[in-house]
Structures are given as structure tokens and as C-alpha cells.
Image 1 (cartoon, rainbow, N blue to C red):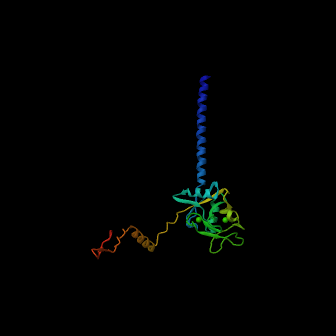
Image 2: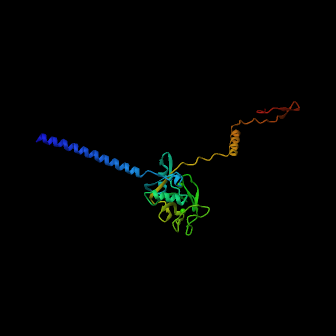
Image 3: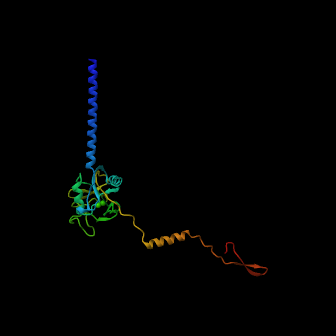
Amino acid sequence: MIAVGTVRGKTHSRMLRKLAVVATAAVALSVTMTDAQAIPVQWTVASGGNDHYYESIGFTGTWTSARADALSRSYLGLPGYLVTLASPAEQAFLLSIGTFSSGWIGGTDQASEGVWVWADGPEAGLQFWSGGPCFMCPGTLPPFFYAPWHGGDPSGGATENWAYLQLGGWNDFPAQTTATYFIEYSALPPSPVPEPTTLCLMSAGLVGLLRPRARRTRAPRRVRWRGSWRKESRPGAA
Ligand SMILES: [Ca+2]
Ligand SMILES: [Ca+2]
């Protein structure tokens, strides 16, 4: 009985090990599927897009923390940033691939109330809206080309400075609101190259800074010598 019991015990152990292997494989498969679902989707030029990649991120936080999280990410070597939506087509594409239908986007008027700009990405600093609520605009109001606010928004004044995409249009939310967000990945434009004129002026300034000071020629002073005046060189004179 003891021998049989031992055999059964070993068999039982092998079964448990197999179950553990199967369970581990199932977890790995689950992780793989989750990763696959999270792969950003490219809006190709061939389909009328810009070749940027888009993704909805399950991270939940304030606009500021979502922005920091987006800036810490990259995909295929392309830097991430809170999505910038420059056209109806871009927003439609984003919503077509997103896991979520709402979340933070990259607009803010925190720096100057009513001056809505994109925070990061190729459009960093570009103003897309001015002032308060947009009751009648269709999402296009010169000189701004796209800002589909939800009816009556942005309405929060100085206490609501962060743009949120939701069904029915954009909304302005306060700092303490937490939500998921949308990310966009693309190359950023290179830093501005100084104009040739600017380079010349900079070079001239550097030359002036680096050139040793010329010794000033000081005129000799006149001193009385045995009843008559004569010239005497001053210390430091050339
Ligand atoms: Ca964009
Ligand atoms: Ca505001």
C-alpha cells in the first residue's frame, strides 16, 4: 500500500506540475493577447492620414500626470505625446481604433486663460481656440481650423484648463479630474535653424567677446622740470 501510495503521490505531483505549466502558458497567452491589443495603430498616408500612430491608454490620472505618462512613452523610436487633433478626419480615425471613446487630449489653456494651445507634439504651442464657449461654431472658426467643443464649452474659465474628448465634443475639465487618455506617436520637427543673418550677428558678438582688449593709448602728461614744462609718459601708456 505504501508503494502504491508513493506511486500515486508521484503521479499526483506530475499532474500538478503539468497543471502548473498549463496555467503558466495560459497566463503568458493572456499577456500576449493584451499586448497585441495595445499595439498602436498607424493612420497611413495611403488612407489619407499622416503616418502617425495612435492608441488609447488605460492609465488613469489627471491631465498633467497623463501628459507626463505620454511623454515617457515611445513606439518604434517615435516619441509619444497627448494626442493633437487637427482635423475631423484625425479625430474620426482616433475614435475608430480606440478602446475608449473618451479621454484626455493634448489641449490646454492653463498658461493663459482662453488661449487654447496644443501642449506637445509637432503642433506644440499652436493655438487652436480662443475665448469661451462655442455655442454656434461648427468646429471650424477662423483662424482656427478645428476645435469641436461640446455645446457650451469651454465653460470652466480659469478653473478648467484641460481638454477632454468625449462623445458629443470636447470639454474643459478641472485639474483634479482623473481619466484615461489618448496618445499619438510621431517624429517631432527639428529645432529651428538660425537664419544666416542671425548667425553673422552671433559670430560678431562672439568675436567681440573673445578679442583681447586693446590697450588704450594715454596721452603723456606735462610736468614741470627745472622751471620748464616737459612731457612724461604715464604708466600703461603705449
Ligand atoms: Ca495629431
Ligand atoms: Ca480655462
